[in-house]
Image (cartoon, rainbow over all chains, first blue to last red; front, side, top):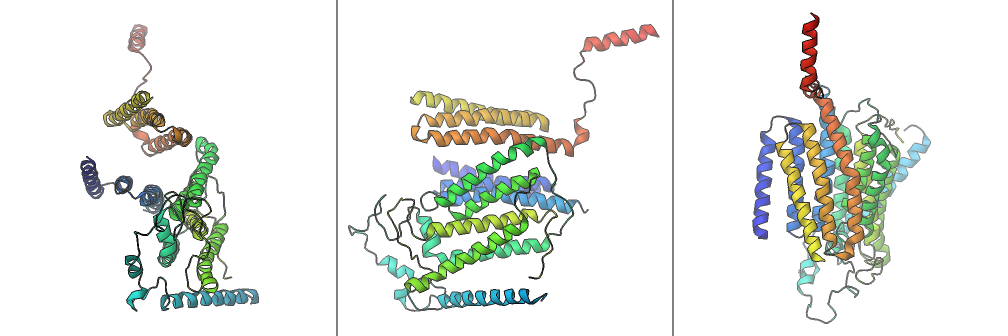
Length: 79
Length: 253
Length: 116
């Protein structure tokens, strides 16, 4: 039962990662990248590592997305 | 240099860093017991040898809540990160510092002020910031009992300042963050080399441990995690201030 | 006591699913955010209250989580919707007055024709 759920989550992560590459808009790709971080954090809980899950959730889905969007705004204003 | 005072401060800083660098070099190549970088001497000095020859059928080696243990932290991951492998953690702190420094080098400074956003966010921001600081503070104070530790606690405390920047409040100045980061980083290395004068080998946990599961247990680990949390929080908050104007010109002090 | 917990958990799960279904079916960003935040808030609050009946020792911590979620979900949806409105301003303009009923429009047209 748990093995089935973990396999399903890994397929979701692969599909989302392929979707990041194929999407044409850059702002969409940044937000979909946050979904990959979220699925990684959940699968860390399945492997019974709560320290790594907390770190990945706070840094991957919070700080990395914020810094990406601020940099994107700064770069796209010049063009 | 600009004047004599800045020359004196520069010489003192270089001397202090040279003393620390000498100690870190000698911990990497010494032949005492402990964790080293050059692990190429006798087999009896390696960590794996000590752990493979431990006796687990003994009556004294039970790990239960409220008893004694070799390293009395209830969270085993914490005792590996901050006691047995403290050398690797200190190098990670250096890597984080270099990353933030490189980030500040690449982003060009724009002349955009931190301006006030919508009224709803401006008035709810103090409550959100209090909550985020509370969660982060709980995590590094109880780093040796419950999951977490210093690194995610610093990341969560820096999101409190991020909410403030997005809403239009600048709560701390940029120079205060740099001072906090410098003091915390220097204290980490100084405390780690203090063990040589007290107990004979570098990076050792020289405070007495209590029972497993108490708040005041595990020796030096809560102090180290407090310093690491403040250092990481100050570094990540400094990134957000690089995007707006308001940073002063850095004098050559 | 556990039966009440199971009821709350089922209600929470149903509302979370309906929130996701609403986001899938709505055509516009403004409609989607309405469906998402309202259904998700009720779903999560009911879910956490359902857990409270299974582990009574965790009551205070779960209440703090509920208060935190009620305080931050409306603010985040407010910011998302506002930024979506600022970015695509020309897509959201109504082409006609949505509150006028069809009878008033037909009466005005007849009056205009009689005056001419």
